[in-house]
Amino acid sequence: MGQVWIDDTTLRDGEQTAGVVFANSEKVRLAQLLTEIGVPQIEVGIPAMGGDELEAIKEIVALDLPTSILAWNRAVISDLEASISTGVQAVAVSISASDIHIEHKLRRDRAWVLESIKRSVDFAKSRGLYVSLNAEDASRAEMEFLLEFALAGKEYGADRLRFCDTLGILDPFQSYERVKTIIEQTGLAVEMHTHDDFGLATANALAGVRAGAAYVNVTVNGLGERAGNAALEEVVMALKCIMGQDLGIHTSRLRELSEYVARAAGRPLSVSKAIVGDNVFAHESGIHADGVLKDPRNYEAFAPESVGMTRQLVIGKHSGSTMVKFKFQEFGITLSDEAADQILARVRRMAVQVKRSLFDKELMYIYQDYQRGNGQHA
Ligand code: MN
Image (cartoon, rainbow, N blue to C red):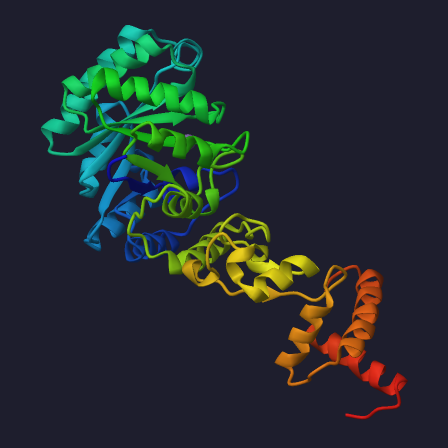
């Protein structure tokens, strides 16, 4: 595997999520945040939409950020002219590669698709733009035509092919095979654009990287159409911790980034969201909490600080006496084994009654009740 780059599309495919709209000020802020975190390319939107979308893109370009700003286009000259008017240096030129899309969406034929690729890529390159040729619905494209598609782009100077698993229907093994074939047969750099309809977006992106893809298109929190896209925080951390590819992203700001996007999109972060959810570093069950107290590496895949989070040791129905002792030690109270056992019994009873874990204050009430029951006073 060579160097891998991410290209964030929260502002384009992320905002295409049904019901999500970013204010222009949020688009600008998010572009700044992504740049600060070290994202080398940001897909900022669709200039051909005009209106606020066009204004937001111009505002982002005017910031002159030290990152590549890319705009999305259909393989149409007028779309590219709109992109050029914003001053972006990079464009995605998108057109369908599968027969089902060509016949039932575009209502054209393969020859027309190849002609559109040639015309639009040639035009974009003649204007000095970096060009990502997007093969929409590449998963369902016949491989022979997909290769022709890629080579048509390459012939006119496309810088990479974006392999779009538009419907999220591939498994990682299929992704690996298809991407490997494209790279071997065309020599073109490949970018993965994967969707999460079967919960495989991140896995498919990694499979593409394993096959030689140098770029991964991601969104913060996996925001995106239907079940969403491959999540930036998942791809970055999985590449770093599982595949040993450090992308140079400042991961300690990932939680901050996720919170910002969750708020701006009006899509609260699930507690069990991979990498940045509240529960990722929360431990309650006796065996796990005890293991974490002995050494966090026993039950944590990576350190909470590495993604800007903190560990939470939760006291509840599944807690053990080690945790109870540890928790009271934090309050400055040393419990005997017998006291810890008795308090644990009360903790479990109360947790079942209230159907949740307990707050610190509730633990103190339990402690006070326990003391009164034993005729002791603090
Ligand atoms: Mn998409």
